[in-house]
Image: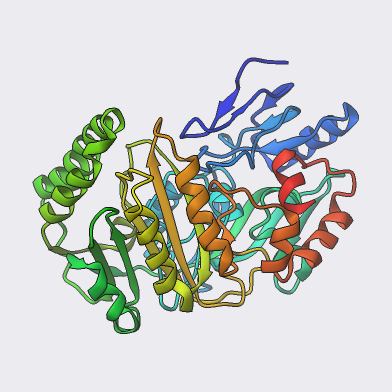
Length: 432
């Protein structure tokens, strides 16, 4: 057994593998999987550690994708780009921009590896464009027997539909072919708004904007809203000073300091949230799409996020507000609410239904278990689906009730990995 070889970004889980490897090609991944099978070791490929669960942890062979970072092709005419598993999403965005193309939608963090982000169901917010997995049109994978396969909607479609958000359970993803569109600018409009007004105007705000999200400050009735819409231009990015002030100094340095104080003196949280939410000022700017979608998040936290049927959002937030007002918890982080259209990815949290995502965060080192448990009871009461990479307590018996294609995906897993070469404790719990 080795010392710790890998840990999650938030420090929630560590891996103590028997051995590690950083294969630099698909053939090398195949050889590593075959070698592990000969030693009867389980295999997991890790990413950047931005999952909060133990989805990537193994006690066998831990594969690092740091040498699998090539971009094999970008075809603007076909609207596709093929990228290897370990390239960070932020680097992929920059490279696509150099070819005049972009992803249609993405989340608000871009430091994850491409495979890790897709495999755990990373998403942003969108009226028409879904999460990253819905933009995948092809996968290259190494299966448990060491064979290399390619799958798509036309080529082994059951494997493709299962493995797009596959948690690494179906094979090691070595390359992904993504759908891309011509590069575009986004106009961002951010402004405070009372929570009651947001909820009253929610149908209008969602319909009128390509990308709408909001952040509710617990212990207050205040939110900050963000509306992103594609525009022709010209680009009018934030000044260097305003970007540094808002997104670096205030959102990271000051916010971290405030949370350190609140962790030590929890009674201050309600007053601090009132001040923080009222101190926000409106701003608008126009910039390259990926620069608007994603931002830097240096403050460490733990997170739970559930995907709920969008029609239940108002009631769910009402219950969440009552939980906070009860006074049992002191919550210094905003609750983030985003949206996604229904998609056809079997294990996607947005499969088959118009979805609202509700994400709760707590500062690292702050007790979170009771707060998350209270919220999880609300989320599950409406058939919520947990984000695969964020903290939850659900197991196969619950998940098969809310994920209608879970059984079919499990059958595909039986076919491609009958010995559970890619298994671990997390997959045993959620997939069986």
